[in-house]
Image (tube, rainbow, N blue to C red; front, top):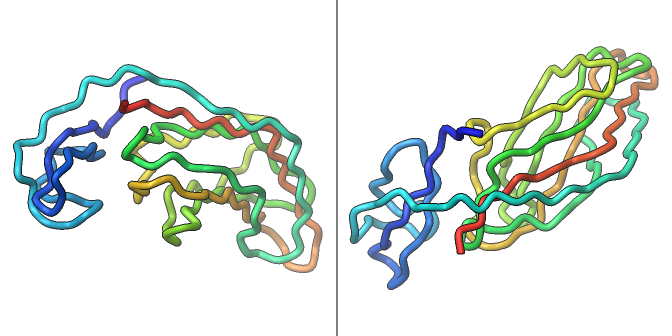
Length: 172
């Protein structure tokens, strides 16, 4: 798979270490520790893709129209690897007109990815690519997968998630 964001390797002026920076163009500042770069960014040579898969049948019944926590999992920080892609096998049924999926970095309270208005009624692979993945933490963190079922308030709405797979690229 080809990704839209590259992994750059550069030295930050505020630290004595080189850091990996994920961006769609050559960075000019250090996003994790602030300040300017003290070296010219180069694209890192990494082809070490690996995945971690969480398989379970998460079925939730919803009555409101707000995001609900489905589960939490460890998220490796950019100092070790980069989250490149998330694949979710899910479907809606019942009174659900559509559903949204969101991934939150709990430690830093930031949205990493969000995909909205999904309408599939049979198990489908929903792919969130690196174009839609942002705010990756530098250090390891806890991420939360959230689901929001959209439809008539007061009526039971259903979303089923049978598998979540995280595609990482190892940096070290």
